[in-house]
Length: 116
Image (tube, rainbow, N blue to C red):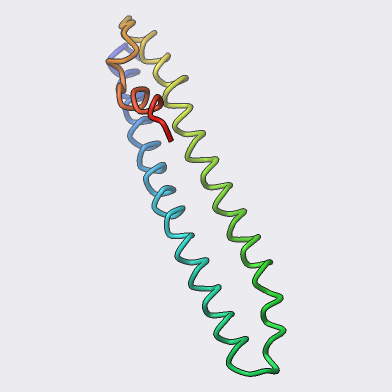
């Protein structure tokens, strides 16, 4: 493969990883609403009849499972970002001979200094 083809492969990898990252961010953000909806449904069921109060015991398990799913997904989002910032950027720098880190995927690096 020549340099141009290798660079195209790197750019395709970047695009696919950004697509996956965007999908995971969307799913992660929806997990909050899913958790609230399930919590409300269980609470509504439990309070609708005195004999259904045992359903409240399910809430911690649901929150644990959905919370764990949220955290695992968030870790994958961060891992993709780290790979793009550190590994893929270095591969492209080596391939192109361009040494200015900020000019290659500058946004991936620039917003890391934002205060959270």
